[in-house]
Length: 454
Image: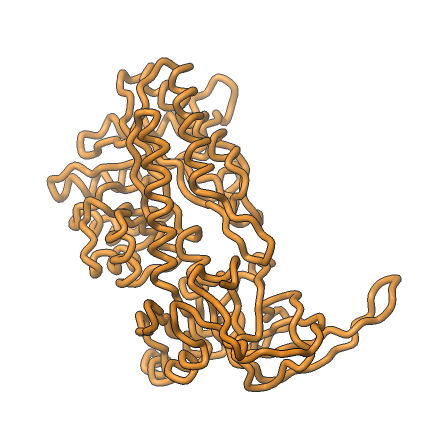
């Protein structure tokens, strides 16, 4: 076993080659080429099951039901959606395209949620026609649009209102989603003293529309969260808002969604958020809050995505140019950093350039007795910021044609991939029990040219 941040079914053979899901990475490279996203199906299923069972047990112990939605934005393919459902999860989507994938996977509409701060009429219509279990509305304008489109179809749309709690959690500013100055949700805090909060205004607006059924309140506080205190603080805010709504309207809504953002290990030594710990802590907290408020416990839901698929994936590359570069340091001695170029880059993993995200890489096709040197793994794009791994120790004899793998890339690699510099996007290859299969094929130049009508 290699251990975190690699998939749980990963190990090294005597000759140093990495094996994932029972498949030698050299075989994967020979059959599927590089770059390639490799996804350990057993690891994905294990993590999905762990979140479902941990939250069901913890919330069941305090007398509350819970649903676990797989956050498809992390990575959604037809097979991945099927795996999630087979492990007892529902599927959360954030666009019409993601909804189409979930429906292609035959996930029942009632087990699908639709998010989005700027849904099109076509997306809302598709969700209504598919009978999705919930549409998470994100603005007062959207409440009116969903009501109108539901009325056109003669149906009642099940909705939740997304609120911003003011609880800040997670990593980079761009992935913290509960502060006021950003595009998601409706604030629980009034704009002016004595005024009604946007969140309460939205909840009351939903109740006035017979075309809408208010299921409950939704909150999401950020991503890559390691400390469960943020979830507990946000839950307290949402449950108080629920109680205030009941006092205003007489309706105690049935559901509260606490979102996702559960952190994973990206580097050796990182500690991931333990689903059992966070489930128990949050369950105990919500029970105490409801007791204080004198309200019954609602049914809860959560939305892990990265926590399930992130550690299950790795990206396999082939090394090309290796270049030692002398670096001058401020106030210190010059040092050498070895730049290791691979056959992909920011088009298959934009997160290091976008967020400064840190990843771990290793040479995986052989063993080496060479001492390690300070290295930076970079891509082949025409950008100096095309960095895959900012800093990592690699063998000094790393060379062209070596296979190199970057760990914990199952989340947001493929889903945020682009064709920058007209590079075709890599395939998604699943490994399971010693065999591999392509879930999403590699793009070709013909695919790229086929879109260009001249």
